[in-house]
Length: 116
Length: 319
Image (cartoon, rainbow over all chains, first blue to last red; front, top):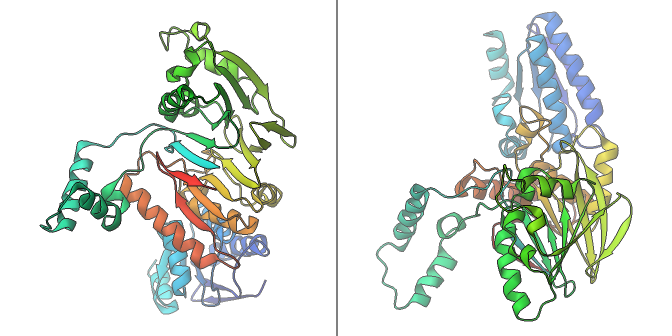
C-alpha cells in the first residue's frame, strides 16, 4: 500500500496513503508493527498521520489494535493525528478514540511525543 | 413471514430499576410541557410520535428467543432464552384458536442464557404437543435434562408430557423444516455456536448470535459473507464496541456493531437487526449504539443502503 515514513526528533511518523480495508489491512498491520519496533529502537513514539486516509473499516481498525498491542509490549506510545471528520466519527463509534491518543495536528502530536 | 422477537438481551436477563422508570416519566412529562390531551388516543399519539424510544419504551430484558411466523402451520423458533416463556404462553393461545401443536426450535448453543426459558415452556406439559429441537451440538437433550435435575429445578424433564425429537445438524447440509430450507454454519464461541439461514417463501433470514469474528481470518470472514449473502434480514450479535471486541473482550465469543455492518455490506444484506444486547446497557445506551450503528452504515455505504434495526422484546419485522 502507499505509505510514507520519516524519523523526526526520535519519533517515527508514518502516513498510510489510502483507506485501509480488506485488501491492504494485512500489509498495514505489518508496517505498523514494524514502525513500533523502529520507534522502540529510536527511543521515541509512533505517530500515525491519517491525513491521506478517508475512511477505515473494521479490518483496518483491527490492524491498529495489533499495533497498540505491540506498542504496549515495547513500551512505545502511539499518537494519531490528521483525521478527517469521517475518521473521527469512525473512531468514536468503534470506541478506538479511547484506545489511542488523538491529536488535532502533527505539531501537537510531536510536542506531546517529545514531552514523553 | 413475520419475525417476532421474544427475547433480545445477551448473557443475562435484565429488568429496569424503579429509578429508570421514574426517569422516563420525568422525560415524558417534560416533553409534554403542560399540554392538555383530549383523549387516551391523543396521549397514545403523543407517546408514539413525539417521544424517543428510550423514553416511551424499553428494549426489554428477556434473553434470546426469536420466532419466524408464517412459514407453515408449525412453529419455528430460535433459541430458548427466558423470552421462550412468553412465547409459549402466546403460542398456546394461538393453538387454542386452531394452530398446529408442533414446535421446531433451533439452538445456537447450550449456554445458560439460551436454554433457561425451557423449564418454563408450558407447551412442554401438553401430551398433544410435539417439540422438535435442532442444533449443531449433539448434547442438547443432555443440557436440557441437566438443568431440570433436582439440584437446579423442582420439575424433572421426564415429567414433561410432550413428544420430543432431537436432531443434530451438520454445517453445509440443508434441512427442510416448517416450510423453510435451513442452512447451518459453525461459529466462533466457547464450545462452538451455530448460525442458521432460513429460506422461506422467497425470503431469507439469518440468525447469527454468540459469534465472534476474527477479522484476521479472511477465509472465515468470507464464509460468513457467503452465508449472509442477499439476506432480507440478518439478526446478529452486536454486543460490544469493536474496540472492546478486539481488546479486553477478545475471545469472549461476541461481535460488534461495526463488524455486523461491514459483513452485511459485503453480503449485500437488506436489513440488520442488532441483537443480544449487553446486559449492563440501559435503554439510553442501547439507543445510542443504534444511532451510532446507523451512522457507521451511512459512512461506510458503497452500494445500496442497509437498514439497521435494533431488536427489542416485542419487535415484529414483516418480510
